[in-house]
Image (cartoon, rainbow, N blue to C red; front, side, top):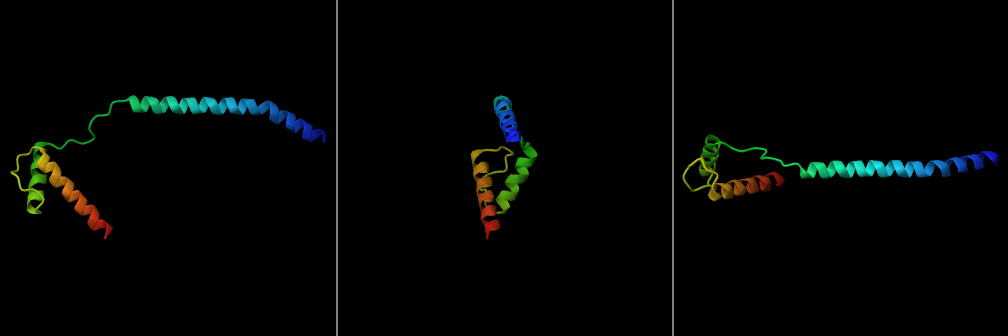
Length: 94
């Protein structure tokens, strides 16, 4: 009986310490998440003119693009890339 009382008393003393430690961990996690979300990120990949030319040529050969190969990522090229990606995803699912 004496051991149970000692154990219960020890748990009562340690409980607030555990809660305080958990609170500190949560606030550190939140501050790291906030710091990461405030960081400006640049583009991961930006195709150069030759790469865009090559993509336009391939898209034209496959029937997704009808414009001229200008090497510019214009709205028509973006639309053709999107169509190609959608079709590729559809084919992978079947």
